[in-house]
Length: 210
Image (cartoon, rainbow, N blue to C red; front, side):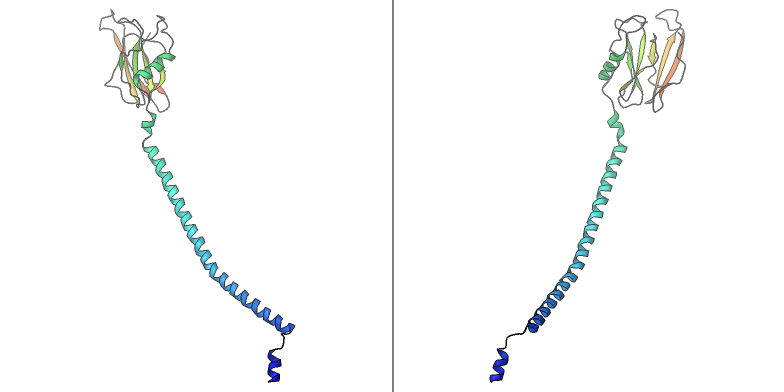
């Protein structure tokens, strides 16, 4: 009994304590390695899910951007339409000098018109203020409501618009000249086509003499 008691009451030696702490440290290391091994697959799974979500977001952004661009391409004309006729004529007349022979300003009331704020080319015919039957007439040219200038550098009398022959990109004007009197229908008629070629107005026929 005395030997057993002395053995159980013996204080642990330094080597015993070192062996105990070494075993405990080893157990903790094994536990941590096991936890890390469990975390690595979960981390890989999380990264894979994040990559899938990121790719899905990129696809959605690409599709939305494509739809926006497509919708813009299919309806650009509506966004390019110009103002109403009265506003367009007022803007044009504010840029015109007085008529060179009479010294009068051009009146804002149209004589004839096929003005279209969405057409590639349209025109409004105006004459001078206080005009008579033979007064000079000028053709105001518009591209989608934007004033481009006049059909000719000088204004001609007896100018008319051939509405039936005109199209959304071509204006056809008729110039009568050489009459025996102001009210006479004799003389000659020169037909001149003005065409929008995509960048500017092109006169397809020579202007009338004079």
